[in-house]
Figure (cartoon, rainbow, N blue to C red):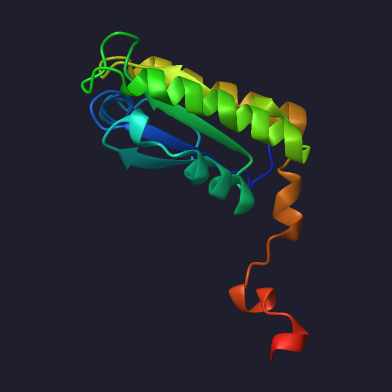
Length: 153
């Protein structure tokens, strides 16, 4: 990934039963995947709130992955279908605020699909390479104290 900057960040919301287990298996099998991905384990992708994804972008994530069970195999019956709808809603919201909707994507990965998890991360890195860094990052202060305006001090 020659075009990906060193500070690139991808946030991956991963279902504990499937995608998180696939990421763990990838590590156990010593499959290399880029360190730019920050994995957040959640009980089910259906638990992934739209606000979580938007907050990740607001805090400077270049891309967001939502990775869960295969369609029809959700441990919570319809959680991954709810996640699909939420990812589509986030795409709409990103377009409204001027960000590319390709920055978020839903993946369906079972617990035994370690190599597919690695490919999903690489796919998201390719997206970031094509689109460039998240433009919101430039407006996000590293130091929270900078968020307080001079007038309020």
